[in-house]
Image (cartoon, rainbow, N blue to C red; front, side, top):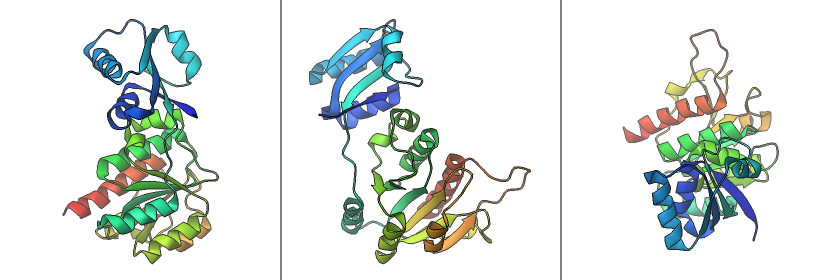
Length: 245
């Protein structure tokens, strides 16, 4: 069975809570004997999952990143296909609320976007298979458990997938610095997908052309743009504000 690593307390606890069947083995850094550790080890014992207390060097050798003293070996998660997502949107009966990331390559930004997507109730995060970050252990760590709750969908042809969303009545709102309308003029209350571009480059031409509406985030200071994960958070919370109104 294929294996991957998850590290950081939030990420490991999310797997333990939501997908315990994926857990294969857990390593915990020596010296920790607090309530959080006891809670996890008791749960692992109940599941029959092996765990081991090891020196920090052992954890450092398994993953690169701030592991916080815990690393888990897990079976690979099942990745949603675009047909899975389209079928779920058709079946759910709720107005679609999606996040599309066009070419975001930094796993830290992807993880941060996943975390905010979970917080506001996004149904899935969609990325193109090429030239885009995947759910690496670093992205999962930054997501703080959201990678285990929000479906992550990689599509072969993003433009074609966007057309499929439009065929299902989903309104595509793309963020672009050159747009004439602002975020606060957009209507996020119905079936909608927020489309965000890559760090520095923004939306690709074909992606931009498929959007039903382009909006910008008002910038009153001296910087030209926001980090993509920050911009995504700003847009998603405006969408949530409208959807709760």
